[in-house]
Image (cartoon, rainbow, N blue to C red; front, side):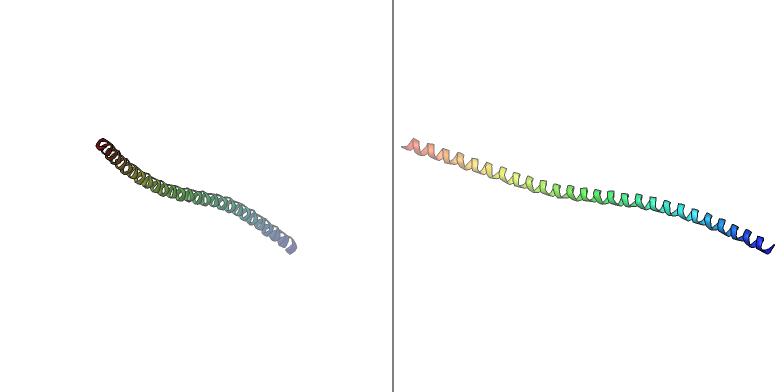
Length: 97
């Protein structure tokens, strides 16, 4: 009868081991799924950070371009004023001739 009890205990231990193995497999699958999701979120966050860096770089370039455009506008006005003065002086000189 002792052999039957040993077989019964072994079967129970095998069933417990199988159950534990199944639960472990399910837990590992869940861990794998959640890890993959987290990695995807991290990649998306990194990509968003790259977009923010690009946006900041483009904003700085736009500011520099606007500053150059403003400087060119000022230079154009100064050149126009100088041309107006030169035309006026030429007309005045031609009138004196």
